[in-house]
Length: 110
Image (cartoon, rainbow, N blue to C red; front, side, top):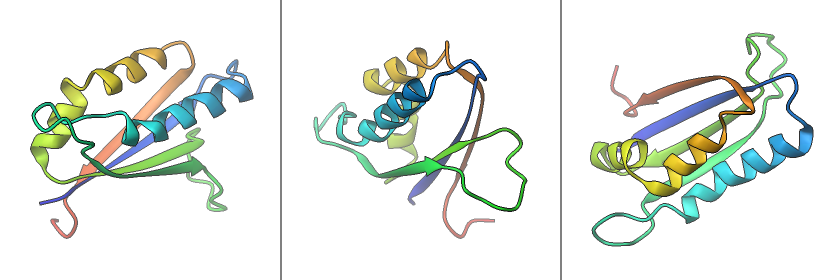
């Protein structure tokens, strides 16, 4: 069953616009950097993201969102816990991220 992985970023107020652009570009680039440990093939099925533009006012400080899709729970687990490209990216965010929210789901499972 596919897994949808949603990530929201709230950047520190001191984060410069160019740092935000760089972090977002690197987040999207994970789709082309993350290799499956066995097949050595790309395994993130899709990755999209951008700056919030909702007029509803419920962002709570989160300004950027990303949606990734994985084929199964095993791929997501590898991505979160072992993939060196993803782990390096997460570590690099420490100085610029104030808060992160993550929601994962299987489409249609309630």
